[in-house]
Every structure is written in structure tokens, then in C-alpha cells.
Image (tube, rainbow, N blue to C red):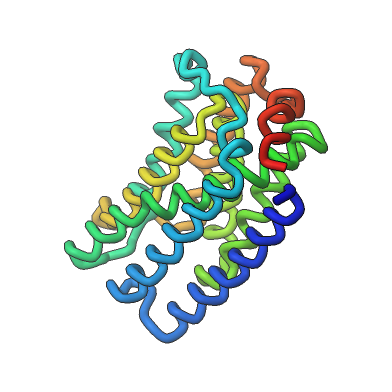
Length: 240
């Protein structure tokens, strides 16, 4: 099976996934256990298929944990993870909060396989890293339409969070790290509000902008934001 055929299968799976999940939350409250279990089953199934189809591409970057020893990265991540605490206001029942925290793991695995492991890596072969990260993040943001109520605060945060994860993936080469960060960010929201009076969600853009700036500084001066087509080319060819 060549790369074109594999990508066609992924597109079909994503269309099915998007329709099924949006129909689910149309008929069931998005906070319901039933809706979350249905979506989780779909996430796990699609993640397994993506891994089977595109494992060489998903693992095409060599992890370099030494790159994480940076004050800019650590401060940037602290700002990133502060966003749920500052603006989160889900107000879930305790058992539902634990369920959503647990299901944030398959959410992160499925989405990072698709967006960082597949889309960003493929775009990185054609263009330089920055366009690959920004285009991937634009697609990632658009992909969430129909899941959340459209608002500047919500979709700007989704975009900025994706930019940050894209930079971290490029600099560290670790799909596992971005999965962990993505899952932790989502899981923290499950237990909100953490403040007696959460800040308006639009203000979440401020710490996210600061975190992206710090992570960009870390990635740029660490020479992580370069065209990585040569890095992915060899292993990507195996998937075709």
C-alpha cells in the first residue's frame, strides 16, 4: 500500500470520526458519560489505525531529551499549564471529571499521531518548519469547529496551544512528550474551576502568547526550527 492510499484511508477515517462525534454531542450532552465513552472508543480505534498505517512517519524524528534542559522551555510550559487553572470553568461532577481526565490520554494520542506525527511531518518535507507548524495548527483549529462554541478565546487558545506543541515536537523530536503535555493540559481543565472566580476565557490568550514566545525562543536558538525534510525523508519512505 503506497503513501497516497494510506492518506486516503486516513481522510476517510477522519470524516467518519468527525461526523460520528458531532452527531453524538448533538444528541447527548458533551459532558455525559455515554458521549465521552463513544468518542473515546472512536479515538482509540482511529489511533490504532494511524499507528498501523503511518508508524515510520510518526516515529521519524529521533527524540533528544537533552534539549529540554532549558529555563525558557520550563517557564513556557508553566505558563501553558497555568491556563486551565486561570480560565477553566467546566464544573463537572467528580466522577465525570476523573473520566474526562482519563480520556484525555486517548484524545492526546489520537490527535498528536494525526497532527504532529503525520500532518506536520508531511508538510515539513515540502516546506520549511515554520509553515509546517502554522499550517498544521490552522488545520488543528478548524478541526475543532463543531465541538466547541465558536469564540475568539476558545479558538485562539486552540491555535496557540497547537503552535506550542508543534515547536516542542520539532525541537525535541519526541511524539511521546507532546502527547503527555497535550493530555495534561486537557486533564487539568477537567477539574476546573480551580479558582473561586475564573478569569474570562479570552484572557487565556495572554499566558499562551507568552508561553509560545518563550518556547519559540528556546526552539529557535536551539536550532530546532529548521527544515527537517532530511530528517523525516528516510523513515517516511518506508511508509510508502
